[in-house]
Image 1 (cartoon, chains in turn blue, red):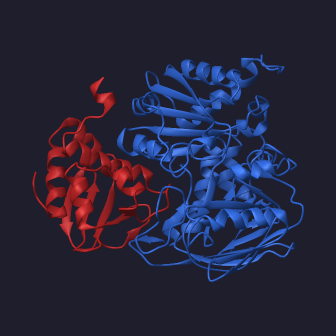
Image 2 (cartoon, rainbow over the protein chains, first blue to last red):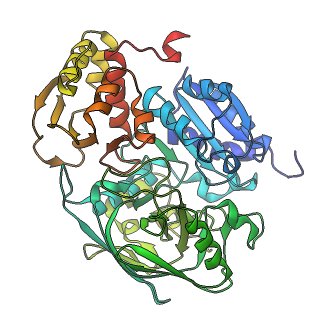
Image 3 (cartoon, helix red, strand yellow):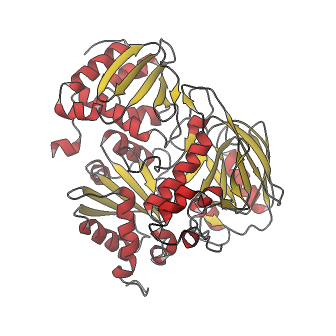
Length: 377
Length: 130
């Protein structure tokens, strides 16, 4: 039992929900990738849920992802072959980092694999919480509606741009222009997860990863997503919250100047090693899950916006644009966010939670007011 | 298939793909238009509607983001990919092929076109072998 009070049956509702997110079907080969920090009770629950669906599961356990994904790292051969031979890969992650990104890309694009990423931290309790029970259908529709707002009018090929504006009483006032073809949706574009796609269990992000311009200031409530952040309070977590003093990113022509205390100094050091373009805005994104815990998954939490400088790991955006060896984040708990003047977040709440179609779908699973009620931070 | 022109290469791949049952199934997965924009040559595009496919020279008509896509790369890298010497995923990761989309938006279409190229070249993957 690993010193915790839970049994497999306590984790099964969430494990079954994972099956909905990646739509495991009878006779499909499912590889469950865990690391040594993921409790065995969790892998057992996921295994049981796969078997309930009639899938053929196998579990592989490796060292923690955040220590192994760095540039050029290659996994053991058995790891690769298991991934390539699977129909579905379920990745239980103790840290929110990409693990062996090249192998994952190859698996999905070349080997007919679809993937579910499950960021858990290292606690069994995570899977007993409300965030883990958010229905796929609801999260998919919420994500798709926001994606549609952020890409409205976009064409391919096309050079049209859109404008995003973020404001908050803490001094945040940022305006950025972006190419809508580079809007992220983390696998929730379609009602069914297709080969080549991955999604994030119970919490997509919608975001942008390529900007034409950015001007203004973001004042962060917290930081996340770097191994180096684990040395900051709370020690051992890659989510730094609260900050000892505000960290401010000040943008002029997309480039960022960083101000603040010792946390800001750490970000400056990370960026200093990232090359010429490491200080360029490369992400504004938001979460869609109203129950996602801030302590382990701030990027998934509805209304929380996060920002990154550098570029997106593993993919150089375009031959004309710059790339960097860093992608470092901070987040803001509440804001007003507008796309071409249309509200997307007001006072920290996603406007789409009040959309009639979204609420009709949510009503199939319970009281929409309860489903979209945000858990306290 | 020794052709140094990407459009000729791709036409042959589509024909070979359509000739097999598995390939025809893959071709029918999506209705989509993909423009291949050559950084050092003329563009061409591939259209699939209801399983009917066509490869055309020139620029595709501008279309809604849901139905259209653009991939940029050099002639050499397209030829390398289409002739089965490199994988699409490696070319993307190496910064030699540039899908004009976020790293999530067109993943299913990346998969689709990668499969057309793979099947057209007769390349097997482990799950087809074991």
